Length: 77
Image (cartoon, rainbow, N blue to C red; front, side, top):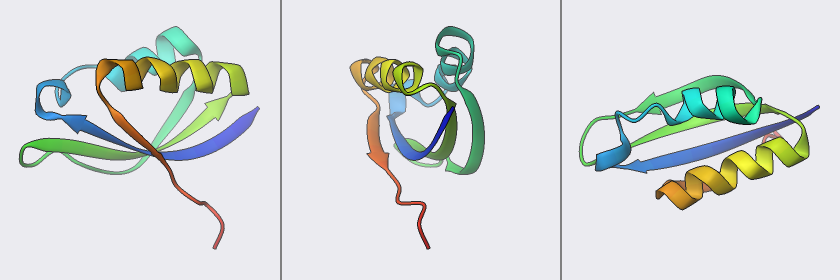
């Protein structure tokens, strides 16, 4: 199992979409929300993802295709 911390930025039309739920259900990724904000024109979430490398990559490709901007967060101090 791999852990990765990512920042996902959602355009306004996707702020209320159940994308994190779909990551859990469809890609077998365990998630932990560290921070989030949905005020204004867009929303963002700092999300810790745990799963196989393949599942995480497929899940990130899926949210990116939906229009979500994905950035890796360096978890080193």
